[in-house]
Length: 383
Image (cartoon, rainbow, N blue to C red):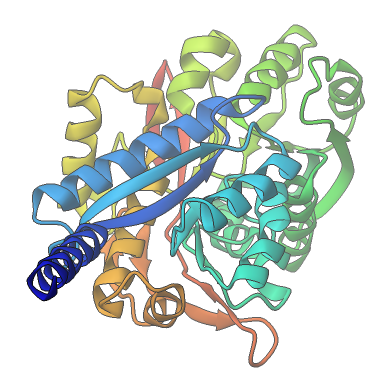
């Protein structure tokens, strides 16, 4: 009986060790993105970029010998779903860190869950300033805030001769916040803002707003919305005979997609980007940019998605570096390690500065921005 008991104990110990080793051989990373719904194209592009990064890291041996496993969930382009997905990833899938959640509105809805369960999230796209100023120490953002983007764009105001601008923005946290930031920046540069109009994210007809802007005396119209709606805006602006310069903000416009779907209506428009894949030599790390583009094309992903996919790519690389520094798949250790991340990403140098109330600071990296213009069906860099 004693011998049998010892054998059973040894078997149990071996099984426990094997289970532990198996658990340590995989690092789960949650991915909370809109894979269906109004902005599904963008969410899928980001997710594809995340897949490329995970595969690249795994091919090199993983993180301290452990392979990355992406646990991908669809927030359905809905803030309520985004919060539910976050809870599912944390509670059921036991992810120690997440990437998400594309829209500022979705990210803001997720943030209370991060605080409740004390799990960090790298924010790859959402630009609303209050994401990093509200006092959430589990937020680390690699994309620019609305204010950072507006201030970065300021260098183009004088060369472009912008004197007065109107703004047409999607009616959500990102759109309204970006409009406010643009207004402050333009006034600081001696310019002025005329009309500020909004449109619902799901609106298919914005001719009323465009008709109002057509008759104004502004020389420029700033448009802030996702590429799906932007295509409609450009087509309707052309049909109404709007002749003003159109510049988009937010880095989510995908000029290649606009050329393909808006055609001549996209000609001459300008777009403020966080990555210019047509000019990889301008990236912070040109070699990484070229390798990312090559792999994206090798997989036959939609080339229009490169301007979104890089966000997922840099986001997973940021998380991987933090996990490696943490030495464990532990949420609190990963959160602490994110403060020590420092590398050249495609989006620029990724290094977090503290933003927000003392003791509850969020992390904010300051990426590069690039202004491009669609000329003759091609995308040129505006220097």
